[in-house]
Each structure stands twice: as C-alpha cells, then as structure tokens.
Image (cartoon, rainbow, N blue to C red; front, side, top):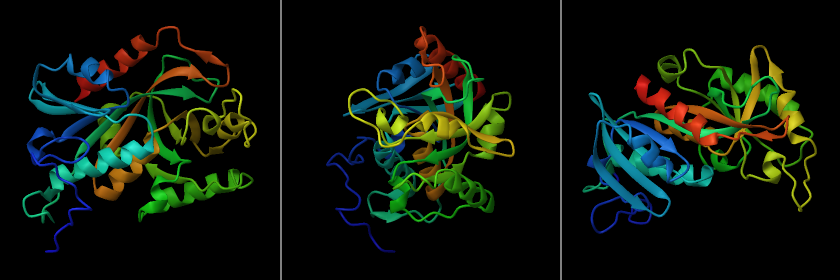
Length: 287
C-alpha cells in the first residue's frame, strides 16, 4: 500500500497530528464541534468525567464520558478553511496508521455534531430557536478543491438554487444533506431548513459597515428561495463545509444552530449565552 508523504500527512515529533496536536487514542467516535475555543469547557462541564484536555492554536479538545458514551468536543475556530484542517485531521486520526503512514483497510465513520450560533433569514424564526440544518449550502470555495458525489436529490435541489442565484457573478455554491440518522436522533422535534454558509462575516453575509457590497440585498435573495418544503432558514460560516467534507470522508454530520439574530428584523439576542447553553444541554441529553 502506498505510503503518505511527510508533506501530505504531517505528524509532530510526539506522534500527534500537526494542527490539532492529538494522538489517535485521544479521539472518541462521537465528536461535538464548536467554533469558539471558550465554548469547549461550556460543553465538557456537563461530562460525567473528563479524561483529556489538549490545545494548540484555536483548536481546544476535551474528551470524556457522558454516561456510557465517550465523547470528544473540539473547537474549530471560524470558517470553512478551519473546517478543512479539523475534518481532515480528525479523519486521519481514526483512519490512517501513523506508524506505517498508510490508510487503514477498515475505515471508521465518526458521528459529528456541530453546536454553533447563527442568524435567521426568515421572519418567522424567532431568536432563541434551536434549528437543525437539513442541508448545508456553501457559498465559499472549499469544496471546489475536492471531488464530490452528490445524490440525485442534492443535485436536483442545487440546480434550483443555482438558477435562483444565477444573476450573481462569481458564485458557484455546493450543497450537502445532513445525516438522516443524526437528524432522527438529535433533531426529530426541531425545526429544520437549509443553512447557508458564507466565506466571511460582513459583506459575504450581507452586512455593510464601511466597505461597499457588490451583492445587493443578499438576505432577501436567500429568504426568497423555496423548493417544495425546503427553504433557506439561516446563515453562518461552517455548516456546509462540515457536511460536505464529512460525506466525502465517510462520516455522519449534523449542525445544530442556536439562533441569536434575526437578519430580517435587524435584531440580536440580549441573552445569547442562554440560547447556546440550551442547545448544548439538548445535544448532550440525546447522545
């Protein structure tokens, strides 16, 4: 079997993966991702026990136990560029033999749940809502660098989305469906919708401070899309990359969104931490 080069798979002198600073035995089969490094401890404080705490750069990891289930919570930082690092390195930890530098013959599939913050683009979604992403719609460029195998359903829906946004130059979105198994386990009673992922926080999400936007009324263009029972419900910066890379690498993924803002009503929550805490507790109760 062909060995991975030292340049393609970088392993630290202590045997850990390059950015995350983790060893293969440090990672559980169930993983919670959060954007903010400070939110890792807000999740792990509910663990029954914590066996590991490690950190490097913005990537903080705690692994422990929730009842009989071993769980890892890791911070990704902001954006799909960081998702590229975190998901490839998590996959390497469970599916590559670091000593031989070869891909394992038997591949492991992780269950990955994102707990993140987001803004609603539909007027009927109130702040404080906990929403599950039925699809991740990426307006960033990450997945243009990876081969994808979209399902017929994903291909058909993306075709309608491309037509809806065809007047915007330079945009070529990608679309990936959530894990049906994780939707049933964690989101059977939650509102769902298409989550749009932007490559930035300001102009790429329709905000304007001083620099002028080139896309007018982006929020209106998002919330006006509808296909059967599917509509774009919210906007953030990681979900599409999580869904697409998870599928490409053979893992299951689900994004749980704490809605902190209404982009159509120009409002932001006065108690964001309470909403995030509600999402954390809900996910851990359902593991």
